[in-house]
Length: 102
Image (cartoon, rainbow, N blue to C red; front, top):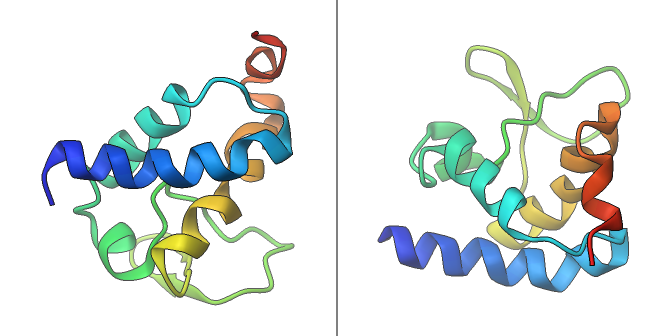
C-alpha cells in the first residue's frame, strides 16, 4: 500500500465516524495513525488493525495480543478505526481543543 492509499483508507473511516464523537478536524487522527503504525507497517497495525498503538488497560474486554506491550486486536480495518477514535481523543483529554475547532 502506498502512503497515499494508506491516508485515503484511514481518512475514509475517520470521515465516517468522527462526527459521531464531535471531532471536526481529521488530519491529527490520520497523522497519529501514520506515526503510531509506521504507515500501517507495524505488526500491530498490519496483523491486528490497531493503527494508534492503543494498549488494553484494565477496562478492555476485547481480544489482545502481547508483542512488547499488550495491544488491542481488531478483526478488520473497518473495526480498528472507529473503535479507536474515542480512545485517541478522549482518554486523558489530550486534545480537547479539537472538538471546538470549526
